[in-house]
Image 1 (tube, rainbow, N blue to C red):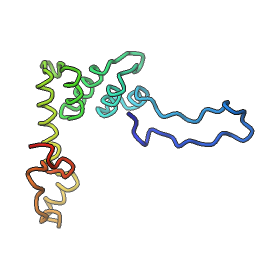
Image 2 (cartoon, rainbow, N blue to C red):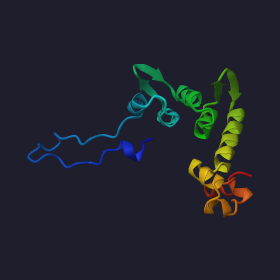
Image 3 (cartoon, rainbow, N blue to C red):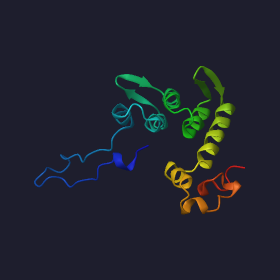
Image 4 (cartoon, rainbow, N blue to C red):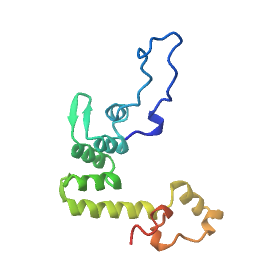
Length: 151
């Protein structure tokens, strides 16, 4: 999966170029993105979503990519979900089944959705206007996008 910032806008062929002789810039491949930012759990997860790939001359399958993502960010919900889809795996020395990965996904997602963004935590602590706003409903787990999805 690509991030919009990884895609260069298409440019027209140079004047006088033979038809078919010009290749527009291509999107950055997932493996290239990981090589540029090997400490990104998001990029490792995206590489896993693409089926894996070769990073710095080492081949990784999808499951290995999700395991790398979780090594970098143990509370990353998407990597837990995808590891569960792959049947589970060993994270930080503990073997997780598919069901346990799904439970970790839900735990991490609930935690992420119930915590305010870092900027609003600071503002709330200083007693700004955002501190006086009513809390989100319990059903939404603190995030409107998840309303009704987690109960």
